[in-house]
Amino acid sequence: MSMKKLAVVLAAGVTLAGCAEAGTTPAGEKGTDGKAALSQSLDGLQAGNYTFSRTDGGSVEGAVDVPGSSVIRQEGRPSILRVGDTVYLRYRIYGEAQEEYAKLFEQYAGKADKKQAAELAKAKEILTILDGEHWVKADYRRLVAAADAEDLSGMENLPPTPTAAKPDVTGASDLVAAVVTATRKGDEITGTLDATKVDPKLNLLTNDPYYVYGPRAGAMPFTATLDAQGRLTKLTLDLPGQLKDAASQAPETFPSDAPTEPADKPIVITISQYGGTAAQTAPQGATDLDPAAYEQLTNDTD
Image (cartoon, rainbow, N blue to C red; front, side, top):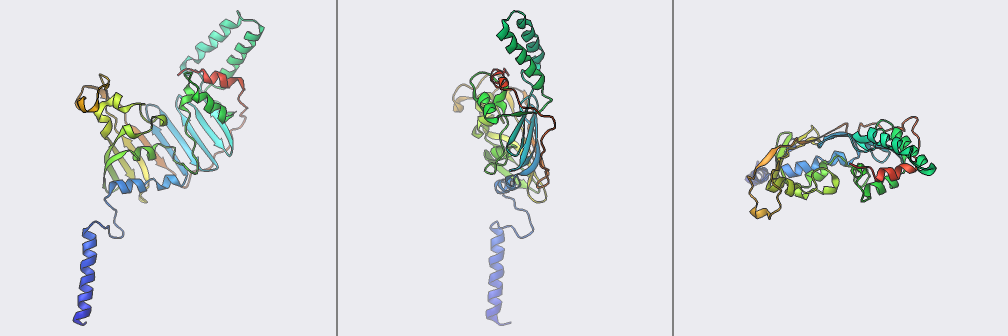
């Protein structure tokens, strides 16, 4: 080999070595950039076919197959099943107070005129359908209207709708968007996120994290686990204890070590069955939700 060719080979080797030292990950090795890996881990969710569960003070589980079907079941809150353009609702109206409401309807029926008695009988009948066990075919627009009403209603916790534009309804993408620091080690990413950057309308956290947690809200620790393909399989967000006194003063004057209650349970999101989640089917025997139920849902108290 001539000296000229040898110089070219050596120069190429030095260039490649320099690139590796500058942070380029050799082929076949996993990168250490936590934020980039975390962002890429959401690609599987963007495909719109997955199964998930979430604990957030209650429990949520779902199966998504965009655009064909999806189901999101929520403990103590409205559950929604979609098959094509048809929407089904499963919900226990009035929650734990349902039996008390049934007794009240019966009690006042004896004192009501004919029209009022019929309305009370209809209200009691709706309780037997919206019992948290049966699926009923519903008008989704009217459910949304009930959720948006100013009256207190459990419908304000209506689960989000997975779409081609936003297929992720697990909450993971929204939490990842608030990440401040992230470090990757193998298939695990750890870091912190700013809870005040999470949209309160998503019902993932409290409406005002700073007010509840103080400065700790800006640096909540999380751990993310990836599968062999780099897809997110688990995201755990550790919640601090709530402040014993509300953080009503300015952030810069509120002590970061202010006394708190015991730490809340973490939010845990698990994701599986990427690309292997089966389509949902219509529930047998589901009837149409009585039109009178929508007003009752609007006034359903939490």
